[in-house]
Image 1 (spheres, chains in turn cyan, green):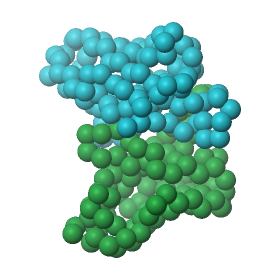
Image 2 (cartoon, helix red, strand yellow):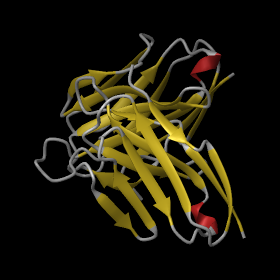
Image 3 (spheres, each protein chain N blue to C red):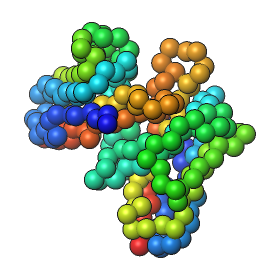
Image 4 (cartoon, rainbow over the protein chains, first blue to last red):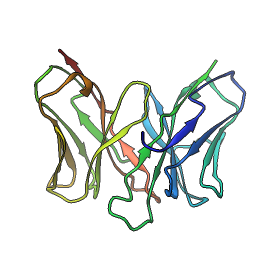
Length: 117
Length: 112
C-alpha cells in the first residue's frame, strides 16, 4: 500500500459527459501528480500541483483541469469526454520540497479506470 | 523530445532464471527510477538511483545508474512467479516541476 488513495476505482460514462476523479496523497506529501496510462501512449504526465498551486503541465487537454485543495487532496476533472479518453488515470505524490533524501520519488495510487462509451 | 527506450519489450523466462533489462535515453538524467506494475494496479517504486555508477539492490533486484548518465539497468536474480508484471524505468522530465517521464516498459512472464 503506497498510502495514496484514489476514488472511484472504475468509472463508466458516455461521450460528452463530465467526471471528477479524486486523489488523497500520502500523509505529509505536498506534491500531487496526475498521469494517464493508455495502451498506445504509455504513462503520460498530465499536471502537477504543489501545496495548492499548479506547478507544471504536461500533455493535458484543455477539456481537462485539476485542483489541489487546502487539505492537499486533488481532483482531476475531465469534461466533454471522448472515446479516446478511456484510460487508466493515476495520481502520485511525493515529498518534494521536504528536504529529505529521495523526496523526488513518486508513489502511485491504485488508479481509476475510465471507460467512455 | 525526451524519450526513454526500454529493452527488451517483453521477456519469457523460466522460474529460477536471472533477468536483465535496460533503459536508454538521448539526454542525461540525474535520477533513475525503476517501477513495477501489476495488472490493474498502480506502479510500485522498486529502486531509486541518484549518482552515476551507483549500484543499488532491493532483495533480488539490482539496478545500476550508467556512467554516461544516459542509461540504467535492472537485474532480477532467481526469478519467481510473482516477478511477473511490467517494469518501467523513469526519470525527471526537462520541464518545470518534478514530473517523471516513463519508458514503454518491459513485460516479464515467468513460467514455473
